[in-house]
Image (cartoon, rainbow, N blue to C red; front, top):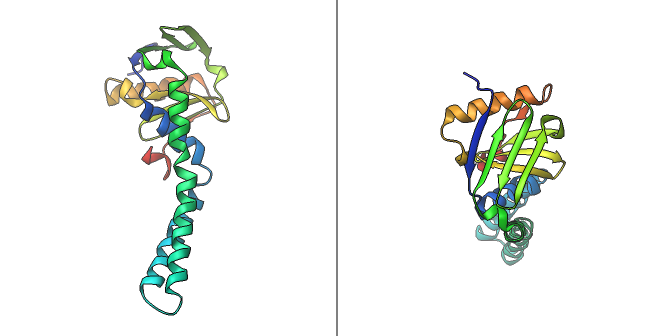
Length: 177
């Protein structure tokens, strides 16, 4: 049963920002990351299997693993910086969703956004991201909801509010985050 309004609240954690960075920052290059890891594994196996090029295969796998780390590890530091730069989000935040849109309240103030401000909504394993620009979105951790039923009601409310757009459900990459 859908409600006319829904209220949720909670306190953000640094991990919420990290999960957003991992999803949003890497969502277009995850196949490259998987390819680098696969090439590193193949190179490592060839190096361990022997042959005259064993050292060069091990070096190649180390370089591929380093490139993968250089793509992934900075996401943690960006998330930490984003979280630290917004002290108001480190305190409880309250959201109200209704037919008009999203209304949020923190210790820093209040904000309202009509549904037409959101151009897309993405769902990951642990977050909803309501995008107002290609890489700028409002994070809603699923743990802010009291139950799975509330999550389902929220999905329905969003889909009514931003018709004809729909929530992009978790795909292969986003299920992890």
